[in-house]
Image 1: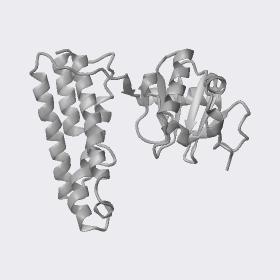
Image 2: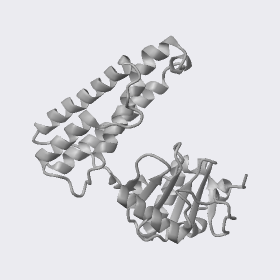
Image 3: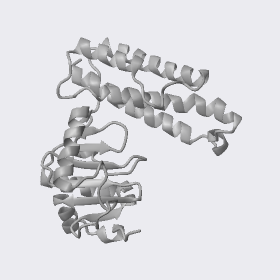
Image 4: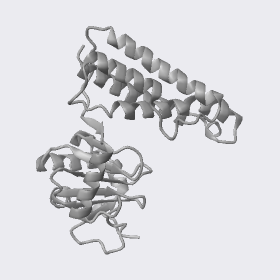
Length: 268
């Protein structure tokens, strides 16, 4: 097996495992997810620490560049280390023994699966689009570029800035971007423009470089700003329920998206 296949298998497993655990947690009765219920302590504490640790491991794994992976044996070691040591603000310190046990079990499960993969000569895995966590230097450089080119303030943009929003900035209701049809429209416009990879800077948490197929200008609890190396466009999703587009991407959406008017933001 080659390193790319192993790395893809790890990413895919962690993504799918996260979704599985999140769905399991969401399926609990309301009282099962209440911080004050006994069933919360018994059921929810058994589930949500697992997807927190899976998210931490996935972020660690995606710090490796799929285009520049280490040799196979070194990659196995790196993935095993991620399983054992990856942390986030949601994984430490453990609040109780149940949480600590759940996270430890999830780490061991991934390590066991990894060791099984490493002994195989072949492993059928569907490819995944490129996604990599940016280094702090890369994040700082892109933020600086966006400040100079687009007037980014911190990691905030229109319509959240003090000055009026320019007329050529397209501001939509952020709910539009939860539509698969809308996302497809935006991604198609980017493909036609350049098709290059997109940087995603978040209000907090990891920043990413992603293929256009993974570009999703959505508010996830953290505001986000997106662009690419051309700096000819920008997108910003705010905590006020807006998503704004500027530059070539705004112009392309205005010209090509036939249902755009239903999503225009009317202001506060």
